[in-house]
Picture 1 (cartoon, rainbow, N blue to C red):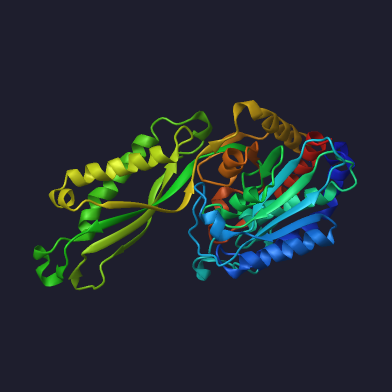
Picture 2 (picture 1 turned 45 degrees about the vertical axis):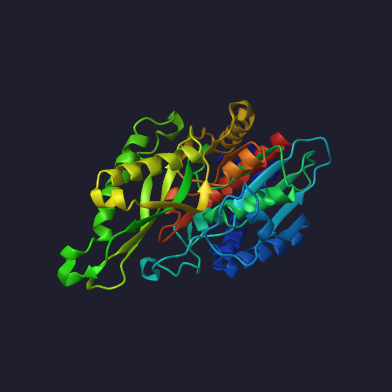
Length: 420
């Protein structure tokens, strides 16, 4: 790190690593699983932190019924009776470009507690990494953004700097959608998703589907008189795997980092209701990756056609075709428009000035709020943050604290150059 050559607000962050770790630990202790009361709790905690630091705060109840009724609503898998939006603002003196730093506060469930070395919501620091659910995805990045906002006080920026804390990113993006509905915009945005401190200007999309397979129930002792819905799902699953191979045969250069950038996976299967019966029905739920060059409707048609072809090749399924249902999170693919590469270049320079090395640039195989902020909000957006995506959603999730510091210093540098 080139601390001796950095502007004073940037260099001073190096002395705040313990404070960053303490704030990150406080956030990890709040079990803000998507759709749980923890989402509300963490937003309340952060609203208090921002107020205590002297920033302008907008903390509002999302109008969920109105958002759901919008034709552009991105979908939502977790049920929420209420949810909150939150923006902290450092106002500029006027005339400069505004910068939004965006991050989601919701986390995925921790899964099997026995798979964790320490309890998932009891943060622990080991070997320079903070462990706990959400540490990597993406509370570590959010802490970097909050400390960047704090470091920028008193620097005389002309443009506003915002930190937008949103809920519901993991299951559709209701928080970012509500942020835009509230009217918040900026001239540029950085989402601190875990990119390993690389710069990510593009995301694949992801659509959630449900397959309904019909069989015919019978006593298991006379299974020859029934039709197993589980057995009839097998050729459909094989068709999905073949479709996946075709869709990944030739991909955009930004996505070639990944062996399988547009994955199709079935994550849940439920069949039958009794061990001694032929299962007469099956429901399979999964997701299909949306390529950078295609719209969600094209991806839906591709999957529906593959399922229809599998059904046509089987006499039973031809007479009882599998029904495809689209539900839950619906993430379009998105990328930073070529004409907005100034943000990409500025972030690359900021990172290089802090670390002495240029970051890599690639596209992410997962959906994120980038597509909402870019497509619906018209905000040039990239992703840049601490942590490796391979640690997200996994047992023993963790983030290197040195990367949290580097992200904070880079974002501070970016704001100083973007909004002077």
